[in-house]
Image 1 (cartoon, rainbow, N blue to C red):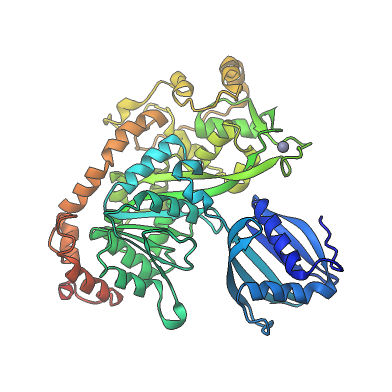
Image 2: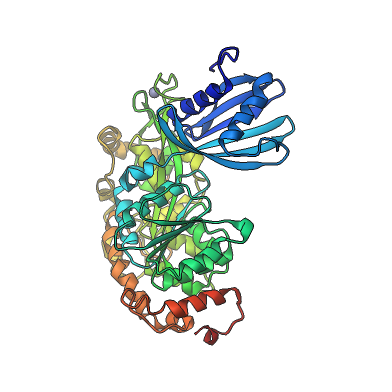
Length: 539
Ligand SMILES: [Zn+2]
């Protein structure tokens, strides 16, 4: 821990030093925790809090006041929570921070969040998406309408991903409008609107106004309520690309959540283009990570999920090194990118769809699940199995979902479909799914050892011969991608007269007539609050 000598160091300088140090450590937050005898300063680096310094009690008040002044807060109010922000130059850094206070029984606790959007500016390829996922993502954002959702818990890098996508879409010929709370990064060339609920300017109200502003792309900071969800879906179905975030764990729970929000099934099934789910895991320190044999449990998970026999993986070095914190350095996202295919679309549309059915469809579709992506990053030596295990609830019923994804072609398979022809022979799978870096030596060893090891350690994936055709990871890409190509999604929407009837809008060609239908759209959206309204009233 660092010690400041307050007999010579002014409080102003101490605050600056704490902020600059934290920012240089890539800390996401600085905590000032009142304790009975001191103010403890902790910083969050790579997701974990570390003690940084202790401020003697007699300087606590002045230090907190200094931070409140910086953040434009009321310094005389210490009984109510306050929010503020700081933007400015500290040392040689331009920083953007959000500050929040909380009156605890031992004094005011202050947390400074350091907003770091430098990553968004580095481009989407720097965010850890696998090659497959980048391809899917590009397909998604090239569809001119529909809704794309980025999901994950708070602090999982949703905003970074969303802003990175916006950077790609930000072109001269497009009108992009955002509604955010708060606006986290200024983006040149984009119209950004800050929600202000104190005066009744909420997401839904801004959205209605945005729709009269001839937008091409709309970013909704977060879908928090049913009304926003409904307008978002309707906006996307009428010729806009809507990008938003939602606080769910994965693709599957996102669909469930939207249905729980009473978004109409027929609209959702048509509108949803794709879902990007992400979580952050710590990155193994490249300087000191070590190879170690896998445990029985790990072998089982790798075999079941990736259909690979893995005997060695990288892990933290218990001795660490000066360059890392407990063997880790920085964080990376693990992602699940689900491009909605026709099967899932049809399923969403069905009232009798059970969660189990939906789960199977999602798991067995052309998706690299969070777990698969995480395990692949583990095999690449980027992160440890422990990090994946902490981030993702590893389902006890792995076999049921992943087993069918592999090549368990058994007796009562469904009648042959075009997809079934893509099933690869079992022995080819490890080669086909090759995605490891050369730094993993286990590949060769794995092959050598396969014969001797499989029968001892690896419980074979339980073969669930449900009716879904099995698709192996490689082949499914080509087959399914064509199925959900942007053109098809477009055509599906344009051709879907039923939906248009329900919307009581004339079937339209997306781009050419977008401005023409803005009038009925507005009215329709303004009616959305009244669920009993007859559809014919909407025109
Ligand atoms: Zn290290």
